[in-house]
Image 1 (cartoon, helix red, strand yellow):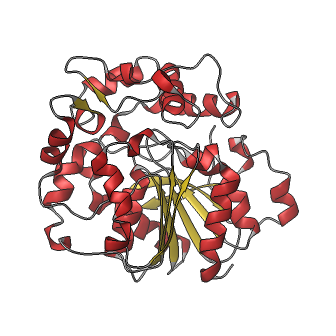
Image 2 (tube, one colour):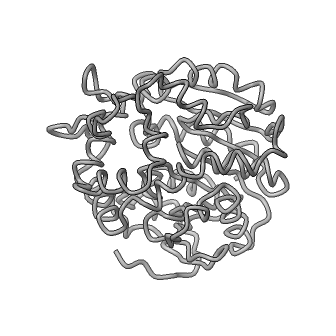
Length: 346
């Protein structure tokens, strides 16, 4: 889809109710020059600003069932493709994907929008960006929501060291993705199979051996950790899968993977954040059937959220929900988001 820049227009509630959320063309697509890149984003509704950030391997599109609900409730909803993803630029250098650049994108986007205050919501990789944005610019980001990924405070040891300790000789995807070239080629060999397998195996619909294995043995292909379903559950339509596949077929996976390749760099350049916390009002929404939360080390982060989110209003684990809560249980996620956002007007 060739989206062109358009002027921000607030739709009526009736117009939102008529939108086919699975149709990418049904949304207001915009482009802006932000922090040295050309960024693609969706801009819908009028009112207090809410920014929704996707994870990997998703796109702005993962929030398609939240956009109308939040806009109808009186919010301006802005949903970018983060740098390296979708229709946003994909810089070549790995360093272009460190957290200082990702946060800079959000600051620049707000300036382009003419906004000075926002609630920022992030899923998976987007939760890391949202958390860092709230921590570094509390003057701009007055509320934080993390979906599925309980982002920890800056650790005492280099991330790769901690990940290797957790893996105990096996291969964890965060480490595997830090290799140059091989993961890019493996994921891009058959984007359709890659995405169908990942989306299904990390969801609450997968059971038993179908579920994502967080660790593989040395030398084992990373895609062995996922299972491609014969047919997909109703929460992800064939049209939705096609959109994801078309976009990743066009872009490849390198830009997205470069975020993982900056894990150690992010740790090195944020020594000044040692001991810092996010004091703004915050919310965590997780999936009780999310395989990414299975390691004791990660589950422990959920149990300790109050310690480094002193403004935490609520934390919720949705039964039967996996890693893509916004798609798997859109109504429940919308209800929780609107309850939290109620304190900010709208």
